[in-house]
Amino acid sequence: MNKQEVAEKVKKIIEERLRPALQMDGGDITFEELTDDMVVNVRLHGACGTCPRAQMTLKQGVEVAIRSEVPEVVEVNAVGF
Image (cartoon, rainbow, N blue to C red; front, side, top):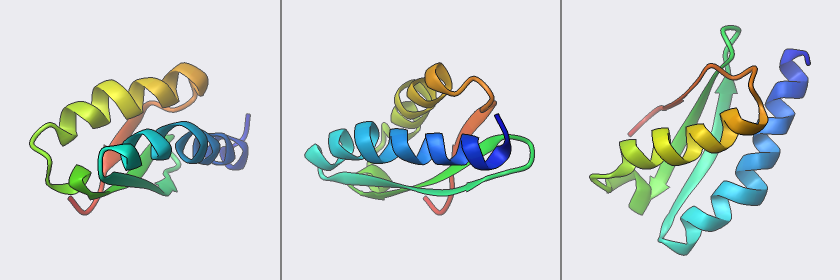
């Protein structure tokens, strides 16, 4: 899978699975970029941006969900906390 295909698949996972769940808790997430090293950068908004458990949500929720379906992704990071 090339970089563009990986990015599109990640965006679909975020839009269809992750955003609705985070929005139910007053937060949100947006895709920012996929680096050449296959690191996904996302931005957390709303309650997710100020939640003390945001890093746990990011690593144990968002990253696990994305990497389970897109093994090419090596890591997910939040930008602009």
